[in-house]
Image (cartoon, rainbow, N blue to C red; front, side, top):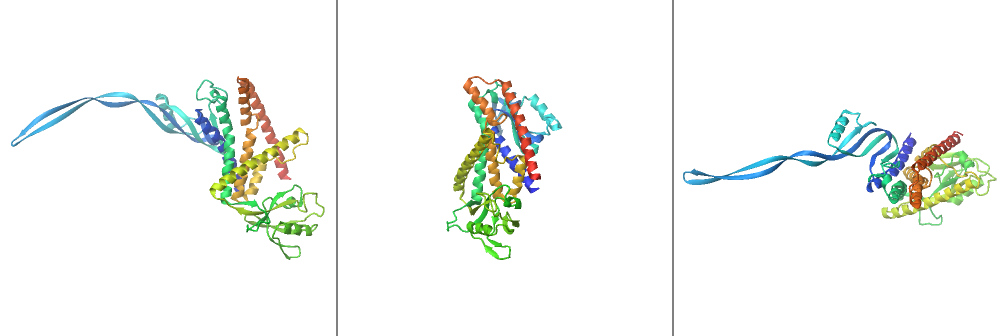
Length: 438
């Protein structure tokens, strides 16, 4: 249950931040957004700021008359002044701004809303953006005026803006995903993250030996060993004798010396100590080793906030390059007819991975969220139909041609692309389900 909640929060934050980028950039460039929502419809409620002018009665001084009266009292004389002001009333147009609440998915289905709408119609109020909270908590959305190509002649329409402004609005969601990844990784460095270190560096204490990779179909994977597991330095061998594994070389020798016989490997996963039974292979494929794992000696490294920001930026850049290289390899394999050798995960696969990182702790959850955010940004900026990159492609074509591409052609392109994306998502989800069922 905790893993499901973490999965929903991560997915929600990634999509919400992406849409927030579109919304803020659109508003800063004078484009109207009719609604910005947290979660997906149906709507629970929304807040909308409305503005307009109404005739307001005001009193204005017309004239002032001063009269003096002498009052005689025995022994003294008093002069009293009487001031008389005359007023007249006039009507002025006074600006009005107020917030109203919209309950439910239909505007005006509540008595108070009907009253607000009636007043707004009577006083010619203009409605601003509706900020809504919706029932499905998986991200967010923004409705931008003219994003469908209409209202080209309106100043506050997306379609009526220059190619540069439209490109900025479309690319802003991707930029927000990269910024979010940078922030998350920087927080990880401030909290302290496990990092691979030089085993010969004696200045670092409290080191750990962790699993950095598990090859598919190996004894380690079949036994349930996972990336991030810490191999405890005190182990008991098959005859109950204590083995002290102080470094990676000790672990490798321990596994190699017990090849062909079952060993109890004690690992730490999150806050749990697990005892895993596994049998190292005698004849292992080249590059895999008896268990089929890669090992790294790590230590918790913390940075002050200013250094964490710089390290976070560098790591975000390096991860982005690594993902682009891996994506390029996948595309190359497809064109060469070799199929996809890398694992591609859909929603089900991501949910399973979320369950695994949740057990490792907050730092791993933040790192995982950052990695997903970078992936989301990269996928969205690619010239894929129905995604931001596909829409930017049409803006670039328009700029090169000097005239807009046929709206009908663009809509068809995005509609077909969206259908193909949904089909691909179904295939990946089916593959994920079959893999985890097995």
